[in-house]
Amino acid sequence: MLIVSYYNFGIKAVEKAREILLHDGDILDAVEKGINVIEEDETIRSVGIGGLPNFEGEVELDAAIMDGRSLKCGAVAAVKRVKYPISLARKVMEETPHVFIVGDNALKLAKFFRMEEIDLPLKESYEEYLKKKKEVDIKGYDKESFRHLAEDVIGHDTIGVIAFKEGFAAGVSSSGLGLKIPGRVGDSPIIGAGLYASNEEGAAICTGVGEIAIRLVAAKTSLDLLKLGYSVQESAREVIRRVNEIRRRENIKYSLGIVVVDKDLNIGAAANYKFKYVYWNSNDSVEILFEDADFLPP
Image 1 (tube, rainbow, N blue to C red):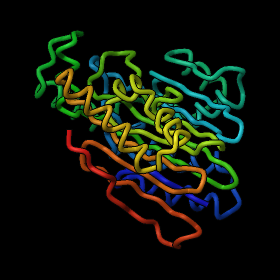
Image 2 (image 1 turned 180 degrees about the vertical axis):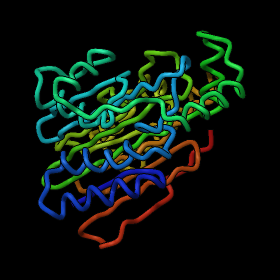
Image 3 (image 1 turned 135 degrees about the vertical axis):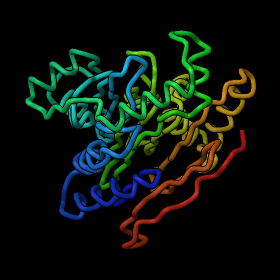
């Protein structure tokens, strides 16, 4: 069995996911419940109910989940008021014939399934939003404003979890880029960009500025590289090398971190900023381990 995540808050996700697997839970349960722990954490400004609002002061949430055993997946984007967007993404996967539901209709679906809602933004998040908006002096819906946001690195961390137990599953959840244009969707709910899982290849999860992960189809690209003979570490590094190439060419400070797991449960991770990943492997240790990813200077 294997559980992988990233960032300091990922430790709590791994702990919960490990608990699920050790009590004979399914990998999808492990991914969902591990991510739920972070979604409900009011102190985290880039995921779930504590997330920073968009440009107009509303919190819009993105999430996706994928079952590598069947390639089934579900996603939601720009959904408001839903306490556990990863759980709604799973409902899309398992209870509808669709893959991706967005905006107000995603909220309608959550209501249909009687999922828990919450008033957002939280007071603390809204106060921080007002402070950030003043600091970056955003002028409006224009390219330079987004460039400013991307370069100031305002709230675009994601929670991602990979689980393995006789098959792979992966999930990600995020409140997206703080102060984003309303309706903006990052990589988190986009299958192949922010996440991918396949028993034939492995699994990958991303975090950072979603626009660059989408452009590179980062998660799926990393797994395609494995099929070409790259190791997991070489694959992760190559994705970040491509990010840095675009970053230099366009002079936009795109940041991205990626964690890749292959069929043999080897883990590779890289980023163009200081980035740590966290994991537990039942074959190696009873401890949850925290490691530095390879740093590729931009």
